[in-house]
Length: 227
Image 1 (cartoon, rainbow, N blue to C red):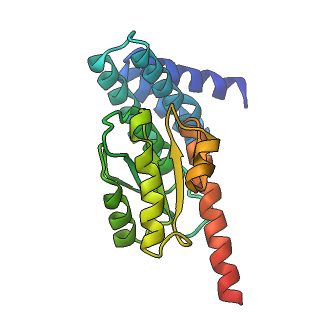
Image 2: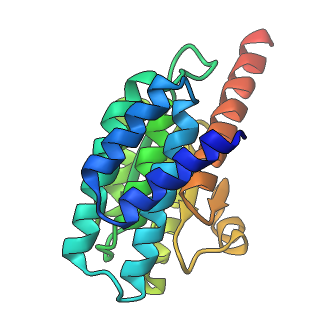
């Protein structure tokens, strides 16, 4: 990464954390003007800044008004960069159903994951927060989703993730639809225990995991066709 790119990414991150919407737009335009990779600018700049703002919120240094203004700055910069994000190699975008499991209304992390997934070219069906397990499976069937993404910040709602996996099995969809999970109390061990396909610790990792799961699904589909 060049020093110029690094400085712009750092500036975008700071603009989000410092609640400077106009600055975010200005720096995003500079990224486009200098032909710097727009996805990297989202990943290492805007998303990084929103992640920092989210941590400040969790530490009670930021409150809801500050977090909303930070999100406005992030989305303003994203509006400038989104048309310049290069499409992934896959000709057809992956489809992912995303949401926070029933009983939990914390959606900052989920919203950040959505941004990263959209930046990577996924079509995201965001069910929001406090979503019953059955709704994930219903929506996944309806839209022909490749992946279901589940989030929670509460240990008490973690069983809902296992219920989604079981509901997929009962519907005969488990072999076709991958399940990825994330959130503060979640671990890779828990993912394995409930039969999920992967766990990510943050939004950037979630984007990478989703891309990997989609590639695996399509490779398996191609092998099935060949046979």
